[in-house]
Length: 53
Image (cartoon, rainbow, N blue to C red; front, side):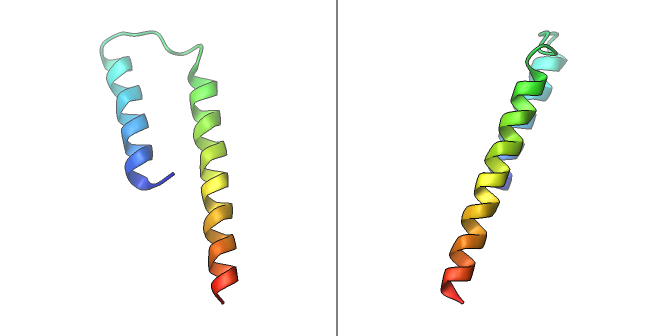
């Protein structure tokens, strides 16, 4: 998950809140998925860089 992906998700999240859509019940799941995807992305990048070294 790159910077643009995070920006898109957080931008959509902000727009939904701005327009009054109640998403507080799913906020934990949204941010949980973002964290999981970041961990997977970090692991993949570290693995690739260590294999190249």
